[in-house]
Length: 570
Ligand code: TEU
Image 1 (cartoon, rainbow, N blue to C red):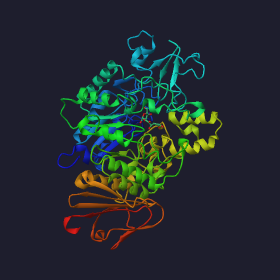
Image 2 (cartoon, rainbow, N blue to C red; image 1 turned 120 degrees about the vertical axis):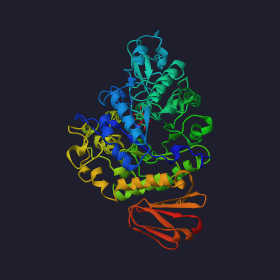
Image 3 (cartoon, helix red, strand yellow; image 1 turned 45 degrees about the horizontal axis):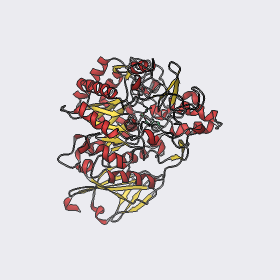
Image 4 (cartoon, helix red, strand yellow; image 1 turned 180 degrees about the vertical axis):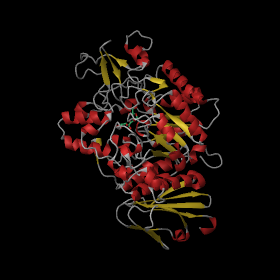
């Protein structure tokens, strides 16, 4: 079990995700860039985060905002130069923080030279670097249904595209501009390892690994159950957490990290991962990754039709899910903790009511779990979902494909838009709101996606001087993790599991106990506490609206309270 004094450094660390396109623009072209990020490092230092995770900055046709890479060892001119990157890295290090890169190696761009070679002919030495298959018998290439499997892409439509050059199909779990690499081929793995070593030699401190549990496919590539749109199937069982994924990750750890000294962080993004698998992936003895991003808690509001068929969250489901992960990875392994990233709608709009109180209550709950918390840019300000007026305001390939396919299939465009407004990824991608000025201080030009009109009152500048702001609440939560070992490595016990509106739990380390009680609802709640908490010290609260007497806490809407008992008191 991870415990003092041997706990790795990242157990008391907080990671901040930067989505470069939307963070800060230094050139006026409307797109964020590396110089912009460097100019805003004071903000991160003030917040107190330990690690910056940088979403992709590599050369890319930008079909999926950089998650489609055409050169892993070059910076896209839209973001700047390699020299800009080196300066950013040096500045991050100078401020005592670390920098983690996004590693997108399940797929490349179709414009990557590896794929350009691979598609050039069946005899090309790189042919086998990707997944090529002939049309399905007895179908004819190019006819609907001729795709080698029936799988539906994450971005709508089939996962196979016919390439006219050789008359074969290539596999892409995401967009057609994101062909999947064939990890069965040892040359592919060696090339990835070499590229990773190159970045580590440059001084980076680790990797966030994009959909890394998809790299091992069942080589038979069987059809999946036909649950998708237009008769397409779900191939998940064929490509998620496949037969060789643990082997590949262990090999990667050996080939890339063995013999290096330094404080590195690896986190694997793993859609659909179960806690049983996560325990294997993060068991330190197995040497795979330090932690994983799991998706269970951000799928609880998906309806029968998936993410674009949302349903209200039942708080009991959230507690059951996160509580299970706390228990499952309590003895062996480690959790990462997140509400937001560049793929998720804003938590304050999703599980909260948009208010400062709901932003801070949700933050309190998340950050005081056992695990490493991740803050997504703007979350520390309580940034909300965006009021997209119509499809023209959307930019994300996933949302646009979904809109067009759903409307073609006969769905009501307004209903599709309503779902996209609630769940679409563009909600996370509107520019960071720095000031109340022109374009929220993000750019001197016109931003690539509209800034949220609420930047006139919801912005960083307004929050720095307000001790009750969302920003300062996040800062205090981060400080608690840094200063109190019970937050980092204490054990976790869920309380009031059946309460529909209150999220409560206890952390304990030796003779220190923390009680976290949060009302995640817009009406006042009263809960009974064990009598000893009457004498406890309040270490944090997000509102004056709470009252604890001998046995009960009265919690105003969205009030969150953290109490501490130490040795003598309990
Ligand atoms: O996302 C993987 C993923 O499965 C989802 O979170 C995805 O965003 C989609 O919404 C599923 O409905 C990762 C990246 O985080 C994402 O930005 C990329 O688009 C994707 O991989 C492909 O690289």
